[in-house]
Length: 484
Image 1 (cartoon, rainbow, N blue to C red):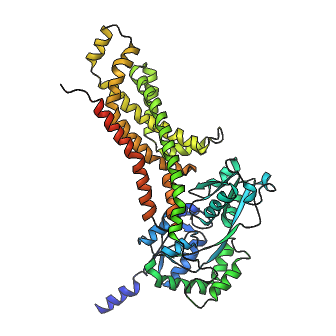
Image 2 (cartoon, helix red, strand yellow):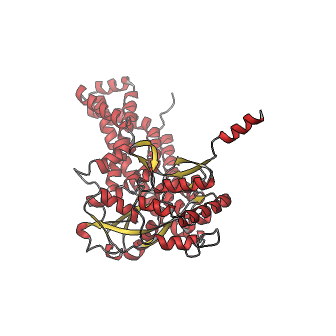
């Protein structure tokens, strides 16, 4: 029995090191191996493997959205987070940050034709510059927006900014040098300015309570810097450059388990950050309500037309309109937004706000039309026949008898749809519209917590939606049909 127990202990697999990252970021960070999509590759993958080996554990990857890495590691979804995670004051105030293991530089990429025109951020006054939300580059562009009048465009990924730059939707992109180098190999006609805008470092993040593991990881990172493992990994992925030797010397030469003095960020003034974001949240709220009202107006107009066509149209018209309703309701609104903004870009380049307006309006028109059609058909036939007997035309029957009663019946579900659309407007951030939820996400990423930003966002949504619900309730009471 004792021998069997010892054999089980000796043959049992090593404990896992769960590390979170975003494979959507792609190479050279984390991506699916094209030769075997069940496996991952990338320099962050190999660094994670080196850390796991040093800890005597088996690495296991956990997929998580890039913007959710901090929150997920804090709540214990995995042990460490690393996928191009930047060393920032806010992040290290909320989490345990490792020593930096790679130095990157934010660089400005422009179209080849503009390489001599847009050389610095100051030269981009009044022009659109894209970047990834919640990054050092985003913070630098926000500063430039205030100082130089740059228009900042936020993205959820690092692929579409360069495509939009090539297609003329942007005038420049500010992102990490290794992301820029990868994108220039994929998208032709781009040029990256050689002078960096700002430097930064990648770090491994852990829950604040996991400082002991962070210290062990620091020891492993220093050892791998000294024995050449990290240099080999970076050279294999063609990201080794002249900045890394100085970083390695600073980090591996430090005797403390804390981050080097030259790299350790100061604790942020959270109160100042919150105050700074309040105007941004208010501006985003205006975008949300304007977009929602305009999209709902479009949905109502189209919904009435579709419902009328399905009630009064000939068989061909009814069949075409029914097909539209089923196709729109049967496909995700995210897919529809992508098709409108990116899929049609070779035919027509819709501005992001217009694409968002059309996407939401066309989508909700299908749902509204079913509400209005049901309301029209709910009006008693006896009333319709009586109106026709009195000599009213079909148009008069619709506008004087059927329409008003149908509107009263449709008011409550129509109001519910408006509130739903108000919340669904958060989806348009995928096509670069920075509405309330997106601005809140950026806010939360930059301060390292969702508590305060989430509460402020919820309060603003309630402020936007409650008056509408109250108004609809009053109208329902006012127009309520008299009881028998």
